[in-house]
Length: 171
Image 1 (cartoon, one colour):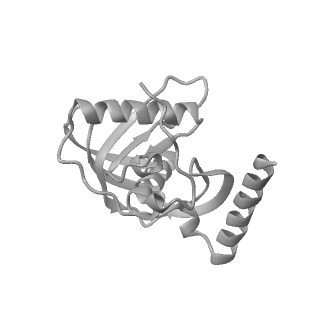
Image 2 (cartoon, helix red, strand yellow):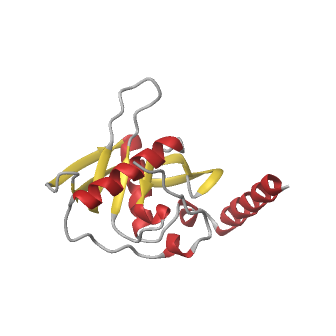
């Protein structure tokens, strides 16, 4: 397995709509494994293919907490087919926007259709933090970042903080 480079804001690939895969094969499974390893090494709970420079519809998610058994999920060509009317506010971060966090309002539950690691068509009802994580990652496939869900002022403040953090790291 190989650790992949995580692209950071404002890289243009993060704003591009990703394309579907035609199916799951060994090459895609290797890529999904590399994505998962990269996500774990970066201490993330989700990673979308565009974040590692591939504009395709693939996501890995694992919301297991420290000390819990890992529970990786592989979602190829995922799509939300239902959203609850009930909303939830959750503080989100992103590997493409390191060290930043903001509260985002999203549906509390979603139903997702996708193809799994073995190429099987699946559906999942995701609730609570899993619903948040999946919506966050699926947004990446449509060129949307969590900062696109906050006010313009808050987004500007977050981007300035990101630039300040990068400047401090360089000096």
